[in-house]
Each structure stands twice: as structure tokens, then as C-alpha cells.
Image 1 (cartoon, rainbow, N blue to C red):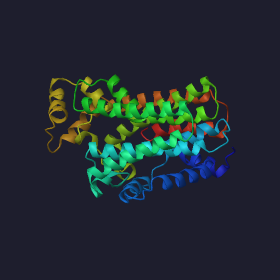
Image 2: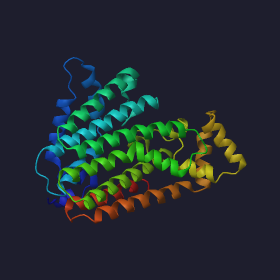
Image 3: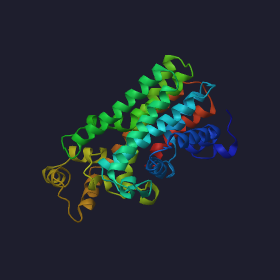
Amino acid sequence: MGLDESTLAKKPHERLAAALENDLERVNSLIQERMASEHAPRIPEVTAHLVEAGGKRLRPMLTLAASKLFDFQGDNHIRLAATVEFIHTATLLHDDVVDESEQRRGRPTANLLWDNKSSVLVGDYLFARSFQLMTDTGSLDVLRILSNAAATIAEGEVLQLTAAANLSTTEDIYIQVVRGKTAALFAAACEVGGVISGASQEQIDALRTYGDALGIAFQIADDLLDYGGDAGATGKNVGDDFRERKLTLPVIKAVANADAEERTFWERTIQKGDQRDGDLDTALELIERHDTMAATRADARAWSDTAKSAMASLPESDLRDALIDLADYVVARVS
């Protein structure tokens, strides 16, 4: 599939969207069809609020692109891309309830506009819809991969609950959380695209490695943006993770290098939740003092390099090149 010069000048996810435009339209139509409910109009209301909020459709694009790398012919890539988006949307609805969030993609969250009960139940509905879609492919391998991903996502979220505000949380535990709550769906989205296309096991493994590493790099970059991003661009306020007492990688590294006085600060603000005026500024100063933003960026770049290496082993194409560039782009946001 060739890309013209105007498309090649765009950002990687925009290039992917342009190359996959027809398939994405079909995915969106299927999402609209399957999020409908004859008896509960609140379901499409809540779902539409999030689905139509301007997300990049990155995860379904990974499924579509992975299938197109091997010239897949048929409709199952459309079903699976919609499945992946439904799983993602369901987790966002649940996450916003757990985190008591008030903003998502620059807009009020569904739990703020409606209520927690609606967000949880509509999220459950979307999970059920996702399983209906994945079984429509008739592939047990696809069902295994995506159901395992759904379980891993839930496990990662529960692990994050126990790791949050716990200063003994290590970088390994952080990566385990990220693998669950973010990378699992990236990896599965890529993997099922290869499975339905009849790719070799080696190629499927490369797709999974790419998705896993891309998801980890993506999440690390997101966590970096919380301490140095543009609220207008990210839809989040700088310091939201600090206020929510989330131990993300920049803070984990700062705690690991903290002296006794600094550790007392982290114990008060993160572990005990006693936050006062000026504490965010102090946190930013400590992060800068130990240069943990740079160290975290280096980790993100290393995961990006892993993703690129995996993708480089697959057949050459414009789509493959866009996926390689995407791995650079997700960390370039924080360079």
C-alpha cells in the first residue's frame, strides 16, 4: 500500500490513519452499530461521549495495520479493530471511576457528567460487546489472545491499586503495572492482526513484541508528560499524578535516590496523602535535582528501540515504516 508525499509528511499516526482510512470508516460504523441499545439509551449516550471525544484510534489502527502487513483479505480485521476499541473504551470508563477523574481528552469524564454507576455498567456492556465481536471471527486463538489481554488489564489495574502510594514500589513493579494496564492491549491488538492474516509464528511474536514495547514506551511518555507536559495538549493538568498519589517512574527514581529529608517529604505527600500548598513545586524540584526526567526518557527510548527492532524484522512496506516511526514519535513527545 503506497503513501503519497503529503501523507508521508504527516505524523506517523496520521500517516497510518490516511493509509487505513477506508477500514477505519468501517470500524467506526461497526462501533456505532454495536454500541447501540434498544432498551438502554444511556449506553450509546455514555459511549458516544468517550468514543467521539477525538481519540486517535491508535489501538484499532495497530490491528488494521498488522493485518495489512500481510495483505489480509476479509472482514475479521474490522471486527477485531472494533473489539480492541471497545475494550479500551471500557477500561477508560472504569479507570475514571477508580481514579475519580474529572477530565478525559480535555472533556469532562462520563462519571462526572452522569455518575459512577453509569460509567461502570456501560463499561461492562462494552466488555460484553467486545467478546461478542471477537467470537464472530470463529478463531479460538483470537479469543485466547484478547481474553488473556482483558484479564491482564484488570490484573494490572488491581496491582496499581496496591502499588499506589507505596514507596517500596520498584521500577520492576511499575513496568509490571504498565504491561498490564497499557501494553497488554497494544500487544494483543498487534498480535491478532498477524494471527488472522496467517503470519508465521515468528512474525506473530515480532508483532507482539512490538506492541508490548510500544505500549510501555507510550505509558512512560504519558507519565513524563504529567510532570512536564502542556495541559492544553495532553488534556491533563501538570501534577495530576502527584495529586492522585500515583507512583510513576519519575517519582520512583526520585524516591530511590532520596536522602532522609527528601524521603520524609515523599512519605508525607505520597504515602500519607498530606499535600500542602507548594508541594507540587517541591516535587518538581526534587525530580529535577536527581535528573529523573532524563533517566525516565532514556527508559522510554530503550523501549521504543525494542519496538523498532521487532518491527524491522517484518516485510518491508510503507505501513511497516509508519509503525517504526510511531515508536519514535511516542517518545519524541517528551524529548
